[in-house]
Amino acid sequence: MRIANQVFNVLMVAYPRRFRLEYGSLMLKHFADTNTGGFRYWVWMMRDTASGASREHLAEWRDQMSKLALLAAALLVVPFGFVLLNVLQYQLGIPVPWNPFNSVYDQVSGTSWSYLLDGVLLFSPVAALMLVFFSQVRISAGQDQAVLARIEIQKASRLAYLVVGGSLAVLGVMGLYLVAENLPCLLGQQVSC
Amino acid sequence: MTIHTNHQAPSLTPATFEILLALADQDRHGYGIMREVERRTEGVVKLGPGTLYGSIKRMLEAGIIEESGDRPDPEMDDDRRRYYRLTTQGRQVAIAEANRLQRQVHQAREKNLLPKLVG
Image (cartoon, rainbow over all chains, first blue to last red; front, side):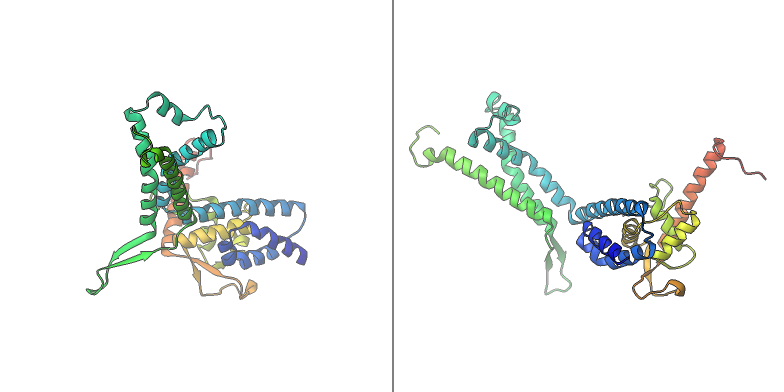
């Protein structure tokens, strides 16, 4: 029985830490009360652990994400894809024949589509950073006359950190590209820019 | 977990409704809920610890059950156990779900999937 409890303790590692801290001891007691041993019991227990743990991870993941942070992450998809495909194609020399950005820039360069894409690539990461900021900050009216407004910064979720990191990385890489491309112009070494 | 009480709302999960039923007549702890569900369904429904405590967590968050200070089951009592009871909202949710199921059973009778009630 003691070995079975230890095995169940190991199984409980599959659950999110917060859930384990809240319900771990109750679940262990429940297991000890119901444990009838045998192969079928353990198959049932493994199935319950697999489905329960995946449900709890999903719920925890959903809890951590505000809708704004999720929208911010979605905004990063296009610029992140652009940077990734361009680094693969032009920096690492890996041919990417299905790069959708090539068709926009090569065939319709200087058209409204390419300007639109320029706009999306530059403003999406900035908009994502702003959305994450607003998803983490709560501004409320002050309780008395001495305090006009209260600003609370919530504990940032993992997704918020990812969006901030991703936005800064994308902006950084695109900034480097822009500077490198226009360096001769900036240094006055090229007349026509 | 969002729980609606109107008749157009999606139904509760089977585990959630079983737990609501188990708590309808008395406060119970987790193991007591499992035993009651198993007894009532003649062993067809067995709630494992993951399913049971995951459902309890979501039901507490939704405010349809709450922890109870009373300890009405001295036979299986233990300081480590936590007792749960239905809230007023939880009772309303259980009634709404029972009504929804009753309507479905009525429709099944109308379609001759179940024998019609005599009298």
